[in-house]
Image 1 (cartoon, rainbow, N blue to C red):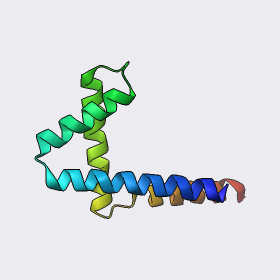
Image 2 (image 1 turned 90 degrees about the vertical axis):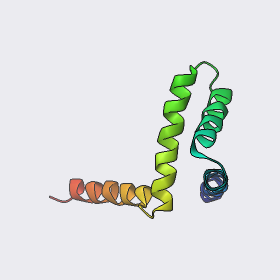
Image 3 (image 1 turned 45 degrees about the vertical axis):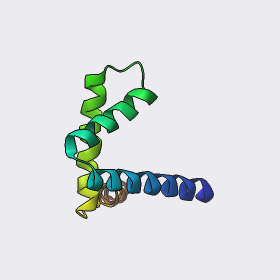
Image 4 (image 1 turned 180 degrees about the vertical axis):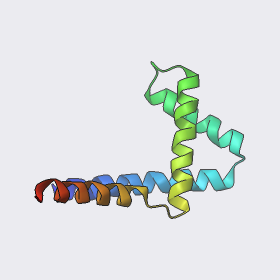
Length: 89
């Protein structure tokens, strides 16, 4: 289980790196268009508008990660706090 988690985290980190590099190297319209195209390639059933919405969402998340928001970490902390509170009477 740990090995699978590490593999997943490594893959996500590598992909995030590529998004960051693309975002820094290319103009925003080109970057978002290419990201939407990549999403459309893996989800051909989605229309391009849906792919673009998803691209914008991914970009906003990437900007948050670059800004140090640590949304994943905070989400996990909130859930763990809720779990502890639910078991304490």
